[in-house]
Length: 237
Ligand SMILES: [Zn+2]
Figure 1 (cartoon, rainbow, N blue to C red):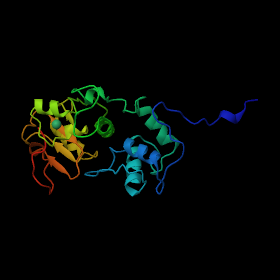
Figure 2: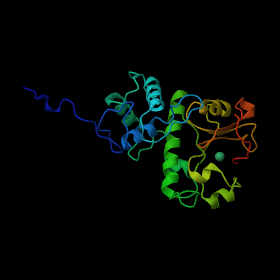
Figure 3: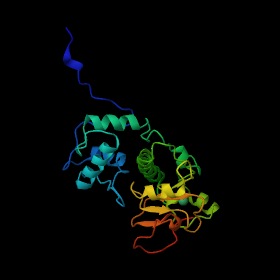
Figure 4: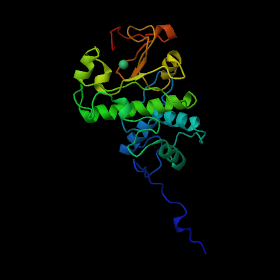
């Protein structure tokens, strides 16, 4: 007779394994780990707070993630949602289609920027999960990454602005790929990038720059992506 004792094994993942179902009202580091994985699903113009508090924004993001992958969309993270995340993440916690290496062609240890190496690397991880969501939304075609993190020395060497988000690790420069610059710039508005610079913005006719910043700054005038009521400072080159 078959014993049912192991009928429902908890899935184990080399990066991170969730030990409980998470729904609105829960909090903790497991919520924060979930928020990082669904950071690309805040809705148009949104940015999901990575605060470890499962509020309405997290519920909406989880729901969008579930919808994107054809799961039951109830905004509650349980086994089916975790299984999909495990499928999407590598052992180093990066999403399967992006890597730390491609987000840093400046140095090997993420040092020398405007934040600690650990923070820069953590910021890059969040950007990768946003890119993974964007990639999936655009038909799972490869996204062409041309670099991300810069130390101060690397930033100076390429003439980057002193406040460039590349110094914080969350900026990523994208090539045209099969999607084209404008499709990338427009799509990025749906995936948690509060900074989007592209064609028509000074220095950005040959790439699309996506990043995080505290207030929204979108400018790719040639693509119909416009500034939205924030100060018009040159942000990045
Ligand atoms: Zn850039």
